[in-house]
Image (cartoon, rainbow, N blue to C red; front, side, top):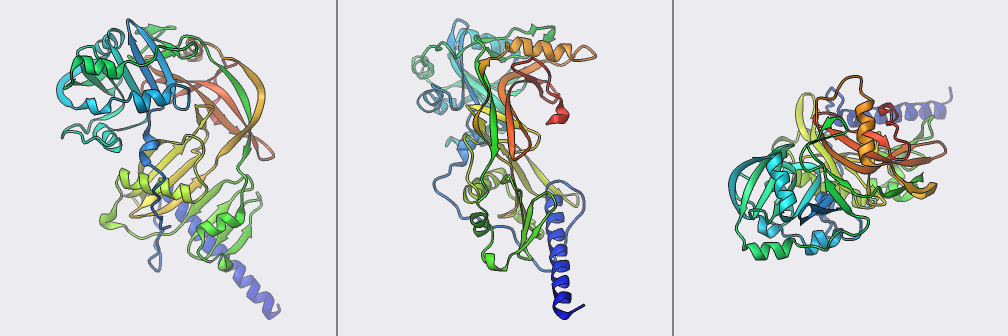
Length: 447
């Protein structure tokens, strides 16, 4: 073999080993067992703090229920008309301050919902209540670190109900004048499309938890055609590599391209999906808390691909490596036509170790038109019946939530489909997706 051919072969072998090591590290970051040890200390991607991205925006309520009194309700989703009024102008979070007054069950909470004027915030992810208030600029008293994903303020007894689990609440006596509270909580009456009703304790042959709202009129929704994000490779490389001229390029059989400079690895898929990974060292006392990890994740994505429409945090967990909690992985989704996207994987996932980002995945599909014209969806009560009838045994758990979303699946030729689905959540179970047009249960293996 000629000398130049031998050198080329060596270079290729070296590049393959570098890429393999980098992506094995990435896989371990995202949950695989084992531990990577770098011969020299390496670090993740440093992130410049941006002033135009607010982490609190990613924790805004996914839905807001207005209690108008006498059993009248309206339900607003993020991005729909009236939501901003309820959140910005009608947000009475400063009135949350008060004294803990014990606990309450679901029946008492539902009575308060029906009797009083109030406003209820439904979050996409459970957080310690004090931490969520802190994101909103409110300093909570000590001891308010109980986890919650929803709470409401009501004139029924001038109280706040903070749900710690379905049917279980912490109750806060609000320190505010009753008339002032009523004026702050009174919003516009429900419009033709946002009226809602509060479900009773049992329906469609299954138990129902407190606080489950369903729309009075079934909305219309279309199945949408999707396309992958356009991948500007040069812009992507410039964002991840300080000196793109030293980056090696390797093409895989599935059309993906791997780029590496010997320290970090970046896989770019034909449809614009990304996977970034880097080796890292022990982070010691710099283990990130959620607030730090969220800030770095928000800034990182803003600098490396931007955010899709109405993004929100869906879950977070420690990143495990070698049996040790080394960092945090944060997972995000987004909305299409104000409805949350549910897919087989997470549209965006960022892993933060210490003060840096060490892993990043992105797979966002964008709507480009209607696959089928908008049509009225089945009633949510019929979606619950489909879940109940689809079980081999009687369901013992209760329904804890029902809402309309988009199930997104990738297709061929870099295209995809967004199908409107009713998401039926049962206590302690994985949510069940029901096709909102056909009433059939979506096979979870298709996700």
